[in-house]
Length: 513
Ligand code: ME8
Image 1 (cartoon, rainbow, N blue to C red):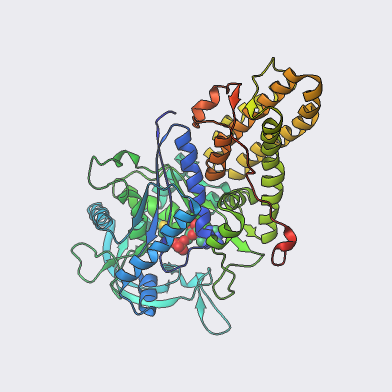
Image 2: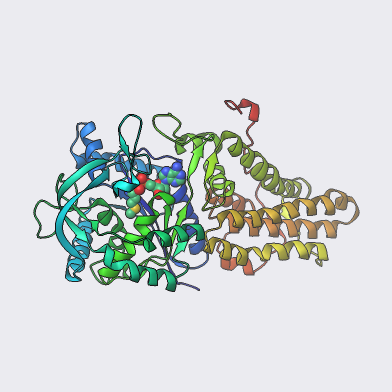
């Protein structure tokens, strides 16, 4: 396991949108994985970025009276700002307008041509600019107002133009064989089944170039054509490894271990992308996980409803780490979920402040007040002490397994079950009584609690990096890697003055509670 490479990606986001909690969510999940793997000794590459070509972005630039390039320069900064505000630890931020990306797209294109999978034809069909996707007529519906809509609700328009086609129809059997041989390639299971039935129902050749506008990567040796934005966008994942230049610092990272995406774009990642790659003679990614969709206070998030949640505002009110915790704890990763003020407050006040924060505060406050800030050395451990520490020691393997299958909620639930045990332990062992009756035993209980807090803080760093750094400072712990969990901490350690980890928010003070 040690020093093994780990490559995780997020979708590259369309720059025309203002970053919201949906974008924050996917990148957060990738950040937690990246941090977890780094602490576990792996060589990690964590990539995010922006998708800057296509008709949608071209239109958004025109609406601002700008040329596309200066427009994307300006708005892609919003996504860098989001990464900073959320504390994301991405190793690279790719923009599809960079020269390195053009080189990769051109090389991928040439290889697919050489494989015989591209041919020139005429496209006639329905296209939704909002989704940057083609739809079969049978997939569309006509609304009351006469507007024809894609299944996603996006309006479609009739497109007729010369186009290059990718021979996707020829890939059906090879894709099915690939899914069969790689049962973990698509997760969760229900999404995998959807993809399998889509592919089994038959694949049509895919239009992969456009001639009616110009904002894209030019098709090599084919004047007037720009690459279909999805072929361009997906290629970002190999561009960032330094491909097609051999021998770069990141060459060894392909194939990616995990593409994290929302369920809206699974088909592009699980069907088109492996077909493009295999055609070009490159390995497909190892896994694609499609997570669910956030609504807000029970409603779809949309600009027209004016309910788009700005992550910066949530961070300002509740704190960055509480927000990070909420997003991953509130719903099963994979399922849809609802963002509500009430839910956010409950996670902050109950899980974080009452259960976890109090455990630390009771323990460290007691040591500060009664032991002059000096953590006592432990005497012999009782069965009760050992049971608690054993439960904490079991967390690392549990977390490896849960995080390895992207079950963030289950990982956090396992940690909180130990936190609840620890709160029961402190009440049962009552160090405040032992102070008067048995100071050696009191010292052992306090050491057990501090050793437990050290373990929890180290393990929770990926989810709440800032707050856990603060707690580890209060525990005077400098080695914070997962490897350090194997060695119990010393006694007779001077601890700095403690301060609360989480700020509880009075429910009644909020707008609408
Ligand atoms: O699709 N709930 O970019 P995009 C959960 N450029 N996740 C959400 C969400 C919500 N309500 N809204 C957005 C694109 N997301 C392409 C991707 S990749 C090669 C190209 C997240 O800006 C989720 O990850 O529309 C979704 O897949 C992504 O944002 C779509 O981002």
